Image 1 (spheres, rainbow, N blue to C red):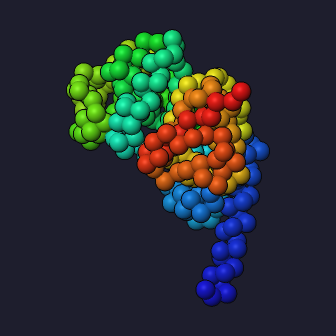
Image 2 (cartoon, rainbow, N blue to C red):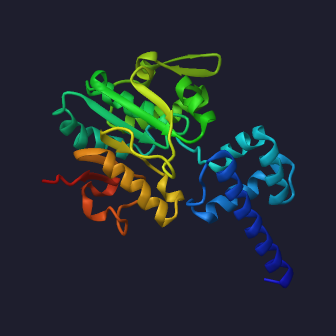
Image 3 (cartoon, one colour):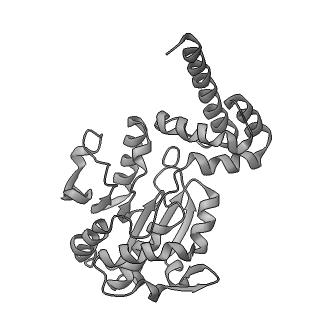
Amino acid sequence: MTADDAAGAKEFEIEFRLLIDAIYHLYHYDFRGYAPASLRRRLKAALPRFDCITVSQLQDRVMHEPEVFAGLLDHLTVQVSEMFRDPTYFRALREQVVPLLRTYPSLKVWVAGCSAGEEAYSIAILLREEGLLERTLIYATDINPHTLQKAAAGVYDVERIAGFTMNHRASGSSTSLSDYYTAAYGRAVFDKSLKDRIVFSDHSLATDSVFAEVHLVSCRNVVIYFNRELQDRALGLFHDSLCRQGFLGLGSKESLRFSSQADTFDSLVRQERIYQKRGGA
């Protein structure tokens, strides 16, 4: 690395930190505990979108144009998902977790970092197929109000449905995904009966606290973008929200190993990162 490159990298780092701090103090979104390398990549990709050459230019626009921050939020939050993503995870829920959930008279589920709602609807469909949805309330949360609006609408491009359908079938379902949506004009609209069991709400794993006792938390491919301190905070929230012997599902590259919660859960389905909270006295 040349001296000029080193100076440029140092300048970017200073501007990057100033922008993250400005977002926190002005808009109360806390990205200070997110993995910096991932945030840097997303921020660099966002610069041309807002006609900015430097992060300082972007910071000036963010601070004086709220609509720019709303657009930047879409870049800073990860929104890559699909219905029944990693079908073996949902098969494990169906075969290993659902039989235990049947023992409860009513159920609450928390889908944290729900993005545009694909995972929340997937869990709703699975519970419908297993005869549990009518006694279940699903809390689906995210920090991005734009994606929460899309999630609440339950509308997806019809081009995505073929992939959703393959995943659904691989999850062990004996029904057709087409039973749960209506397609027209290039869009697929999922049934109101599913939406009625889901509450979409703003919640930050970085700053907010536990809001309900739940039986299952599904938070996949979210904490991987946090630093160790924020990972521990989020996992602590999940532990505190779960009822005795409740269940936690993480992403395929995520684990409780080395976290502050490692000794508070047992591994239920190791390969699918599904854990069960240890029952206390």
